[in-house]
Length: 236
Image: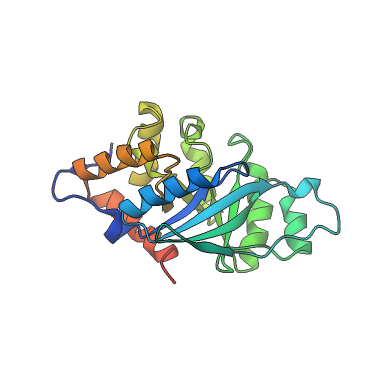
């Protein structure tokens, strides 16, 4: 368990101004999105990047064309809103990356989703191809409960291949159970988390996160994780 001490309240306003790659369901109602943005604004977030549903390149034909990299949607509830596509990462992605320009956030970060954490050895080629083109691969935290199924060696392998692993802070707050929280703490303590997201999907989530951040102040490993997040994702 990582050490968390009660010192001064840890605020997102000073430490996580941009909430990167929150999931956005295609069927989401505008009212629900606005409530999420209002909750994030109350936590001090200035900019939100929503990630679209992953695209499967194995289902694309030779004329497959991706949309523009990042769409600036609007400023809603005082928060700058952007959206960016993501890809399913599998062995077929290597060929796709050789034949197509990749859509990347700020022309740098390629957002990737894994279907199966048990089959990652075949991903060395695709990840090498991504990095060889000057991009940084980001492994998204799509399913918070997947942290229970993650194998530490698998995460270490992806880290060694240059991947940035995303962490949903609500997982660290224990919202998805003790097992998921414990696994998240392990990854933070090993320094394998490079990008953070609040994970907020509802107003209730924002309350849980606010209580967690008020009750604890980050030290050591978690503070380093926040600093790593800043090195990668910051306000333009």
